[in-house]
Structures are given as structure tokens and as C-alpha cells.
Length: 306
Image (cartoon, rainbow, N blue to C red; front, side, top):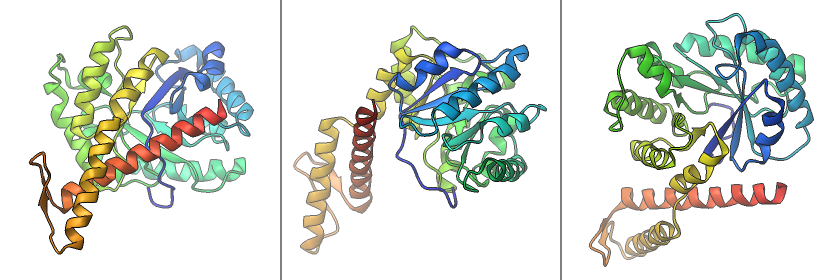
């Protein structure tokens, strides 16, 4: 993410198909931290050009408006559509590009050059748009370390639906079939200095219990935030990825107690609860506090702009 400002972590990324006018106009007020205007899977092949035009018009309308962070998912670089997508959607309203089915560091280099050219033509500051490459195939997982090091990378995404289809497995609620791949994506993200990877969509819109369980599992693995396909999923995702008041209070107590111990010449202590606290534990607590403060600022900004 060299040269790009590290954003406040987003909890929810709400997809909107680029060819549906009604949804394109409503998605910004649905309560998501970020929106993804989709030119790829949600758009039928015969509607690609129309979707590109509609998304470009919406982005033009949003150029001076506040609201959720905007990403655009372009078509895969294995198609001949992605360059035209960039020409249409590289605008000042866009925070970043979602790259589906990323499979190599070389793709990231090619996309970087194409983005720089599109930014220059559009009058957008060169290098200002980030890229969120989605790892969705076996090739992509094996190349994830190089993809994560690519120019403009903000975070990685993981596409469960495409991945299980690619490797030919039948997933079950345990998530064991994708555990290695998801853990590897978390590790390479951390090694590359990216923000945590974004969890995949939960395709069963009415299954909010399953959404909660799989979101909590993704969070335990090291993911942060989740792609959503319906506004009804947003409250559950926000609850899972927002530290509770009790967690924040506990973290503040840990940091305060650790700082006092350090001031008294000790590098560790035991809390009244029996928890042993040393520097790594205190740093983890401080990270949770910083996350909570960042999400609070994000919520205030959304309330102010609504």
C-alpha cells in the first residue's frame, strides 16, 4: 500500500449490480461503510456496456458528495473488458478498484500502469486509487504473496464461491475446505503490511444466523470486514466486527495497568482476573482501542453525512 493513505477499516462492503438503476441510487444510503459498484459477476454479459455507462454516471453524480467509501469491481483481466471499465470509472469519487480473480503479481503491475494512464486522462491524482485484488482460484492462492506485494494493494479479498468451485470441493459449515487458503491469505496480507483481508460474501441472504457464525469465524482467522449482497446483512456484520463496550473497557484497563507497571520498572503483570499481561498483550489491547475509536469516527461521519 506504498504511497496510499491507510484508511479506517470498513466493516461492510455492500455490492450493487452496475446495471440496476434502482439499486445504484439506493446503495449509498443503506448504512454500509463501503459500497462496491459491480461490473463483473452481477452483470449479465449483454449488459456490460450499459452497466459501465450507468456506473460512470453515478460516479459523476457522487463526485462532490460525502458518503460511504466507493469501490468499483471491474471485469477480470482475463477478459477484454477491464481496460474499458477503467476508462469509464476512474473518477474522483472512487476510492479503489476491486480486481476479481487476481492470479499474479504481474497482473498487479499491468493494472497499476493502466490505472496511472487512466488517472492522468481523467485528471485524477496519479496513484490515488488503491486496488483490492480478490483471491478466488487455486492459482490465485498460490500467488497471493506476490499479489499482496503489488503496487496500490490496500487489502486482499477472498472469494469462497469461486474458490470452492475451482478446486472442486463441497463446502460445509465447518469451513475446513477453505481453512488453509484463508489462513494463507491472512498471513501474506500481514507480511506485506496490508490491512486485514476482507471476508467473502454469505450467499444465503435469509440465513442471518449462518452469516453471524461465518463472520465470527472469519474474524477469528484474522479477516476484518465482509462483503455483503443485501442491506439486511449489514447490521449483523457491523455487530460482529465492532468491539463491544465491555471489550473496549477491558482493553483500556489492560493498557492502563501495563503502563503503570512499566513506570514502576516492571514489564509484565497479572490482572485481577488472572490474565497475564506483557507487551504483546498490551499492544493487542491498544490496537483494539484504536480500532474502536476509528469505527466511532466513521460512524459519526456517516451520521453527519446522512
